[in-house]
Image (cartoon, rainbow, N blue to C red):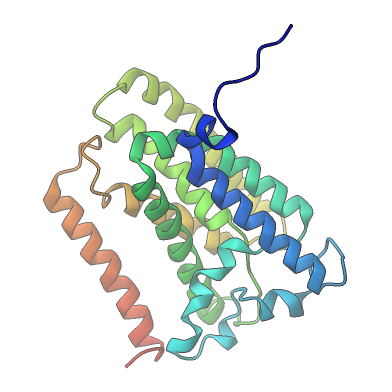
Length: 238
């Protein structure tokens, strides 16, 4: 006879509640995408653009800044969604427990926003501005880098995190190589997301990370200044 697990689903998974919520949001958004695409799993470019994918020609003013956020919840097809959600689940629970829920949310968005900003700049200056990009991989790459940095930055469990980080650096290298080798992948978005993950780890107000407060302040100011430079320089605000 099997014993029933104690507590509700939400009680048993409280330690990874934010991770599961992010996955649920991504899945729900993809369901909306398929509906608007006529129940096709391959989402049309028109639907992606209408739902907020990164498309540089449509980022013209402050009213279009949502496109630096919405792409991290949109996906091109079912495989794209599945890969990103598996990746999110694989590292999300650990980071959520180690950093705390608020810091984990900040990490997810800093990685995603940075990745989309870099993708936007690449679209304007390198790719001719015509590429459409979307996907949680900007945030996921940030989570990968954050996990890898735990082996260097975390005050406790150094041995565990050091070993865990070695494997994660390999995962990052493999995914970066994949991004360069496979056509149609936003390399700039992935690398920007990775940069965002590093920025977040040197900015988050988490005592468990041995980052001096002056470094946190300087990193945060530099990130905000970079975003300001993009917004003002591209005529999106001001």
